Amino acid sequence: MIKALICRVVLFFLYRGMRVLEVYDPQLRQELQALPQGLTFGIRTSPHPGSPCITFVNGSKGLRKGKSWEIPHILITFKSLSLAFRVLTGLESIACAYARHSFTLQGNINAAMGFVRAMEITEGYLFPAFWAKRILKRLPEKQIPTPGVYLFALLGL
Amino acid sequence: MLPQYFEFQNAVKICSGLLALDRLSYELRSLGAKAPLVLSDATLRKLGLLDRVLSAMSDIPPTCVYTEIPADSGTEIVDHIARLYRENECDSIVAAGGGSVLDTAKGVALLIAHDASHIKSLMGCDTLDRGRRVPYIAIPTTAGTGSEVTAVAVVSDSVHQVKLEYISTHLMPDVAILDPRMTQSLPPRLTASTGMDALCHAVEAFSSTQKNPLSDAYAIAAIRLIMENLEQATRHPNDKQARLAMANASLLAGSAFSNSMVGGVHAIGHAAGGLCHVAHGDAMAILLPYVMRYNEDCLREIYGELLLYLGGAELYAATPKERRPREAIHVIRRLAKRLNRYCGLPLRLQDTGRVQAEDLPLIAQAAVNDGAMIANIKPISQKDALKILMHAY
Image (cartoon, rainbow over all chains, first blue to last red; front, side, top):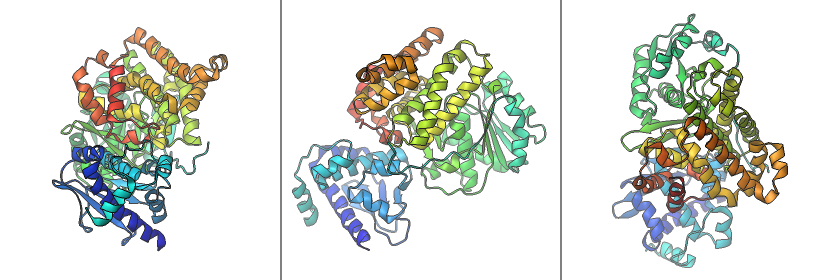
């Protein structure tokens, strides 16, 4: 129950944070712009119905949230909530989770790579540097301080 | 060091060695096959190797034979063959050929297993269940891809000029038949190129983020066999012992990378293949030392250990510890140079005659979006990939 709640909170900040960084971080913007417009990317924290999930839409006016009932073009489904929890709380990277077969990926792997990099850039901002250093192969050059990302994310700017 | 968690699977029955092909009928029978579809390519038909396969199937003759699979088979071919399978009411697949033929067969088996019509609709990694059972026997005629034991299929998307990767343990064939007679007619140049592909699989499997003790054991065994037999098989195509050793090395390396993934060499190589049609083995032979050089600072210990298997105990003992990683790269470079002198194996991308300098940025762009990139231990940005490509050009 607590894990599901934390996952929901992290997914909220992941989406909002990515939207903020789309404005402030040119590298993240470049990653998203390279993806096909209209591409939808979903994260489900477990195959169990009702588990925390989110769908991103790479829209013409930037990133937006997709409808929960739509099947995304690319869908990462964690094999269990505990495995998703480890990734979403920065205990392991998405690359590490891939190495450990912690999730399945439905859709074009090539198209997923750009989105995964965008997620990693966002994690680089959301997690404290000492934490992010443990899981990310390369830290992003921050264009905006971490508290700023959280503040703008909370305000929905 | 033992990883916190790993998975390893190799459920393929391996029939390796003397008269292995003559067991084909028995293996088909034991899988319950009655109406096999045989897949191969035009070259094997011309060389008479297909006839050899067909004569080994005299008890259970094929219902349909398809030999028009090109070198870089695409999604349309896979969809087309699946239609043939259904029209001819086949119940199993026998594929004899190189990586393209074996991967095409995997795609067909996947479509049949899931009652699907388009292979593109099944894209993904670990998403599919087993589906309907489609008995599949793989007979490799090159010693490089290891496709006969891997959970990976690479199919070209001609529209977007990329190679699509399908990853699922259900892609693995039921049986792999390694018969030295099937690789004997492989020309020296192709023997060298595919052998370097196998070496690349083993080296990348040994140094990727998903490496584990079992994949390491397979990779080490493969490297030893390759270093002992690749030149011999290239120079003496009729040496059955060397041919069989290379077939086994390819299989071992295939199983290693299937369970630990490949990395930057394959990511950049796939992009070069997809955009410029560089033969996969050539791309691997060219890029391997350059990507190793790039990764060296992150993989010093692993590359240092690799020297033992690449160069042997004497060279390892005679090389100071701090110089072992670089020496491991030099051993591979020297091997490639010897193969270049003997059969013209390309050492640079421009030697392939397919890559122009202006293609490099596009290759770099496509490379970072290849699924293999995620398993490379050191991050490779588009800029890094371009630098590697420029060195290798």
